[in-house]
Every structure is written in C-alpha cells, then in structure tokens.
Image (tube, rainbow, N blue to C red):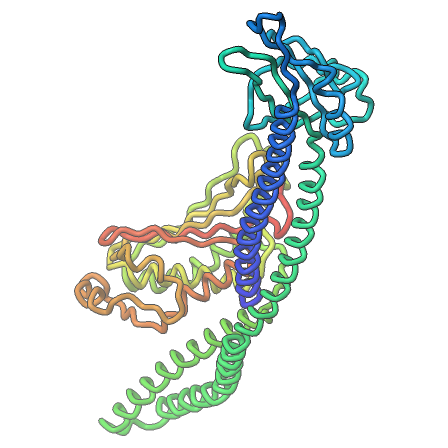
Amino acid sequence: MFQATRRRLALWYTAITALLLLLFASGVYLYVRSTLIERIDDTLNHVAEVVERSLIIESVNPDGDGLEINVEASFRDNADTVEDDHIDLEWFSATGELLWSTLSEPLNIPIHGNPTGETVHITKEQQSGWGDNPLLLRQVTQRVQVGRQILGYLRVSHPWFEVTKPSRQLIIDLALGTGLMVLSVGASGWFLSGKAMEPVYDSYQRLKQFTADASHELRSPIALIQTNVQVALTDLELAEPQGANSSHYRQQLKLVERLTKRLGTLVNDLLFLARQDNGSVSREFTHCPMDALLMEVVEEQQLLAAEKQIHLTLQLVDPPSSVADPELVENWFACQGNWDQLVRLFTNLISNALHYTPNQGRVTVELAQIESASGLRHSYNQLQIKVKDTGIGIPSEALPKLFDRFYRLDPARTHTQRNQVTENTTGSGLGLAIAQAIVENHQGQIQVESTVGKGSTFIVMLPISLGISNK
C-alpha cells in the first residue's frame, strides 16, 4: 500500500515536472527558431536593398522614354560580394524571364513578389545540377520599379540549413537536458516521497504491530476465562440445586461466557486482519469444490435459519448442455483457494443475511460459473456466488463504507426496524472487512446491491485458477 502511494507521488512529481520542462523547452525552441528565421530574413532584405541601390538604370532610347537595367554593369561586383555568405542572386525581367543568376542551374521556380521572406521546397526536377545542396531555400523577392514602370524582380536566396542545422542541434540538446532533468526529478521525487511517507509508514507499522501483538496476547487469557467459565457452569450443573443463588450465579456465568466468546471472536478478527496487512496470511491454495463448500456452510447455518423461520436454500446453476466432458462437469464449480478462508468468507455473508432478515424471510445462495471479458479478445471463467436476502436493506449512502473496518450502520436505522429483525445485530463491524480481505487474497471481487426494505445481494467473483486463464 505504501509503496503504491510512494510510486504515485513520485510519478506525479515526475509527470508535472516533465510537462513544465516540455513547455519550457518548446518555448525555447520556438523562440530560437523564430530568431534564426528573423535574422536570415533581415540579412536577405539587407542584401536586396544594397543590390537595388547599386543597380545601373539606363534609358532604352535617346528620348529617355523607357528605362532598363544594365545587367552586366549592375551585377558584375555583386556576385563576388554575396558568394561568401551562401547567398544567391537572381534577376528577372518585368515579364518574369530569368536574365542573370549566381546559380549554376536555374531553379524553375515561378517569380512573385514576396519581400517578407518564404521557405521554398526544391523538387527533384528543380534541383538539377545542385548535387548535395539543400532541398529548402529561404527567399526574398523584391520588385524594382521607377515610378509606375516595373524594371524587373530581384530574388535573393539563402540555404535553409542555416536554420535547420542549429535547430536540430538545439532539439538534441533540449531533449538530452530535459531527459536528464526528468530522470533527476524522478529520482528526487522517489527519494522525497519516501521521506514524506516515513512518518506515516512508521506509525502504521507500529499500529499494525500493536494490533497483532495485542490480539495474540489476548487470545490466551480469553481462552482461559472461557474455559474456567465452562468448568464452573459444569460444576453448577452437577452440584445440588442451591435455590435462587445458584440460578443467579448460573446466569452471571452464562453472561460472562457470551461476552468472552464475543471478545474472542473480535480478537481473532483483529489478528486475521493484522496478518493480512503484514502479508502473513496463508496463500497455500488447493483444489476447492465450491459446491461442496457452500453445502457445508449452508448446512451449518440451517439451525439459525430454523430458529428465525427463514427459508435458506442453495441453488447451483448447472453447466450448459454443450459441456460434455464428464471430468469438466464434475469440476465445474471447483477453484483454487484456501478452504478455511472461503468457509469463513461465506459464513460471514450468510450469517449477516440471516441476522438482517426478518422472520419468515428468504435467504438464497446461488453458485454459477460465468465468463468475464478481459480486454477485447480474451476472456476467463469465474465462479459467481450470490447471497440474496429479503432483509431490511442497506441505505445507498452507506454502501461505499460498508467494507470499512469497524463501520456499522446508523443505530437509529436498526432501532426503527427492530420489530422486523428479532435477532441482535450488534457486532464489531469487522465481518465484511474480513470478507473483503479474503476475496482480495483470492484475487477476486466483492460487491453489494441493496434496496431499503427489500433486501440485499452480495456478489462474490472468484477466478477459477489464480494467475492463469481457464480457457
């Protein structure tokens, strides 16, 4: 229990820290990447402005009506200037015809004005002659015009690896850093959660040890008291009648006997739960025919049922007709379990049903084998045992706490229905907690359905085989 809580705390610490680190790393990556792109765009725009200012514009005719760019004179020096910066220039006419380029092969990319910068993907056909050059370019296209006359287009290109290379390295660095931080936080969370759980664990261990020791130490004196009371009662029965005093002593001794029996039951229950918490409850399971076990328990409870005139029955749901194997039919209701624990489990459930069922009521125990789904394609067989009664029922608000230790229903509810339940229903509140512990020890499940005034149904699900599928 404490290890599971410690794991959950460490996982929460790690998960929250990992989420925060992921958000931080994503923010850093996006900021650095946008900064790199902005720097490249600024560089491209600066180059475009410098080249545009260095363009030599000439008149087409002596009258000066038309203007044109002297390509040879304008770009003769610019090619050497941009070569060292991995920047390529392209000059297009006003109609989009490529007139001059620093590229060895044309890109065949349609020209359009885009002074803000764009990322262009170069296809296989477009990168002919590029060899191992990158497949992505960052480009800025400036439209050059004088007045309303468009003289042409200047396109400046820059390799995209100036962004991808540092970005890729940044991702690797952030991933490594984040991974190391998550591992460090996980280890720290495990250590700190252990430190935080130590006081609670120590208190719980001391409480369990005290419960186990007290229960164990109380068993011997209680057994001695009960033995001496029984001897005294036997002596009174054998002795000569002493009148009113003898009858009074006999009543007092019987009262002491009942109280010691109740106290002995409480001590045994506490000792069982303490052993369950310590993991020292026997897990040596054997082949248990559940039908025979329930027959034995029902037979033992018939005396109490007869006293209250309650109809107690056991119903066995026969296997389907498709099951023809005699051995399988014979062991249809068998499972792996601890016989004594299972007897105690169903004795508690059936005796509770009898206690809370009024006279002339009914208690039905039903045994069946059912198939339960496990995932999408797998299933396994379980034994389903239902203990139904026509008793006073349990309020819906009490159902979630019903299996808690020492939990008992509101005494006012029992008082209002005292006319219906003649048997004394006071108890220690450990019966259902022990039942749940036994079911969990057998890797099963227990649940309850109840309607006030109509009765309750306790449903126990036990696997046919522990840890392996029956199919």
